[in-house]
Image (cartoon, rainbow, N blue to C red; front, side, top):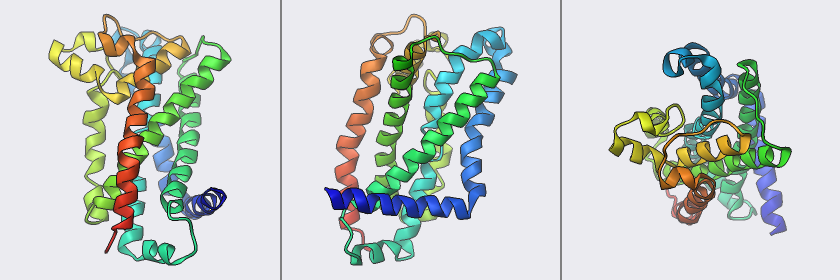
Length: 259
C-alpha cells in the first residue's frame, strides 16, 4: 500500500511537471468553464430566466458540476499518447506498483479539477453568486463535485486505454455538450417535454448539480421527480458505480495493453 501511494505521488508529480512546462493548454482547460459561466450567467441569464440575478444562483452550481466533465479528454489523450509512444511499456518495466500509473494520473487530474473549481467559484462570485449554506454543507458540496470527477475519470481512463489512438479521443469533446445540456445544469426539466425532462433528471450531472444547489442553499429544480428529490443520494451512488465498474475494467485494459 505504501508503494502504491508513493509511486502514485511520483507519477502525479510527473504530470504536474508537464503542465508547468506547457502551461497554455492547462490554462485553457482551466479558464474555459469560467467563460461558460460568464456567458450563461452574464449574457443569457436575462433571456432564460428574465434576469441575470435570478438565473445566476441556479446556473453557477450547475456549471460547477459541468466543469467536472470538462477536460476529461485531456487525460484520455495523455493515456493513449503514452501508450502509443511506448512510455507505458517503460513504466511497466520499472519497479513501480502496477496501479500507480493510473492512480497517479487520476491524482494529478483531481488536483487540476480542484484548481478549476477555485477559478469557477471566483467567476461565480464576480457575477454575484453566493451560498447561504453552512461551512460543512459547502465543503460537502465541493466534495461531491470532486467525487463526480473521480467517477468520470475512471470512465475516461478506460476509454483512453481502449481507444485506437489519440486522434480517436478527440471525438469525446463533441459529446460534452449533449451530455451537459441534457441535464439540469442550465435548465429546469419542468421546461422540457416530459420524456426529455425524465432523461435529463437521470443524468449523473443532474444529480450532482441538484445536490450542490441544495447544499449551497441555492434555488433548485421545481416539480422534479424521484431523481430530483434524492439528488444527494444519487450524487454519491452514480460516481461510486462508475468507479466500481470502470476501475477494474481500466486495470484489466492496462494489463492487456499491447501497442
